[in-house]
Image 1 (cartoon, helix red, strand yellow):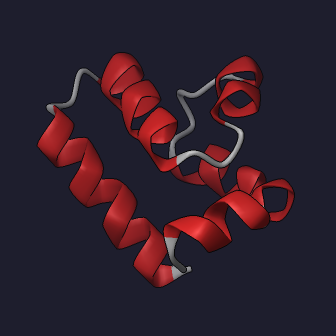
Image 2: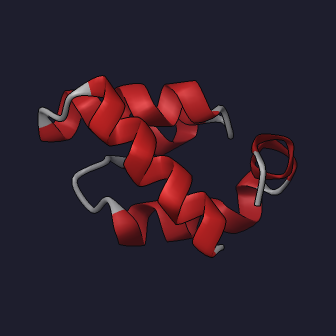
Image 3: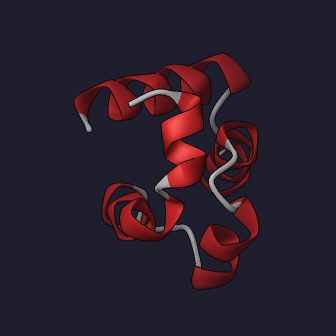
Length: 65
């Protein structure tokens, strides 16, 4: 799945986001609105990850969808 597909299919995949990154709150997921950069930022915030690590995790996850 690419970034455009993520934004377009956000309603269908936000549950998968919560399953993968359980520390994200409902408000976090709602504020992301399918934007990859926002997801990376929230992962950094909640998990204390470096930006590069969060980006890699999101990219791997998107590739597996």
